[in-house]
Image (tube, rainbow, N blue to C red):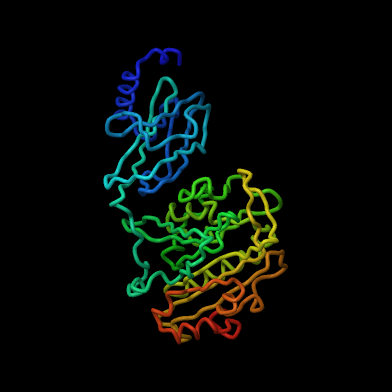
Length: 393
């Protein structure tokens, strides 16, 4: 490395340019240095954000950012570390808002003193934002009334966000959530569920990460929570098996809550499986999963030492659409579980009408439904007792 102390800045830039022509993000396996740098998402939107950079190297390495066009330094992005030893999977790349209509691109250059490799990240311009497409179901008229899974977003104490993913050349919405920064949990996560999302065999990607929409304001899920709490998904990993990106987004810290293992692995897992079963026998099922927190709720620490609220209870509001069903095209139900250990599975006693859940939570669920089917029919659905319907049992 001492030799490089005497090489001029211009020479380093030339070397980087040469390296970029000679290598891709992954070196051939035959290369003894096994040098590799990569990112999960090579294209991002115009907003401010963060992502992880993965480094593979046996020995000492350095990282640098260069403009993909001219090789100069970039002033709109930075790295949390620029040198280290051996493999490292949590180098943070931070990038600023791109106010220009034009996209911009940088290279992340990794060197070990003898070899250089690089990968690129492109940030879209403000005039080229990817928009989620309508529902991935034949009933395209649903898109005219708004996303049916969404509850009212009128709480000034929450931040509202949506994740989407690309598959087969189309962009689909993944999930939306109402984020409480004070509690560092989403009070609700809303998402569509149908065979498009569940068909596949991606498995668990285990891409535990800060939510790139919030950066370090997200909960940090890497090492779990202090105490005897699991990293409980609100949108289950098993509900997103269609592609890697969709599943990886379920491992963001904003989709997690501190959940008792005896709750997460038993009655909650049973309820998640039931909801997937409803979706597999419907055209689309719309789900809102959420938590109840209170001023007296317990607190635990995430892997960055942030205080995170432990929910007092969990719930799901479910709206099922089956065009050809003899029991009615639309059906709605709600489920409420105190956050404690249960010895059995979900029963009728854990169900209630959507109206009852609205009373408990103060949330107005499925606000776009009346526009779709009319005020009277929507009110009837939300007042229905699911314990009395064979749709659910």
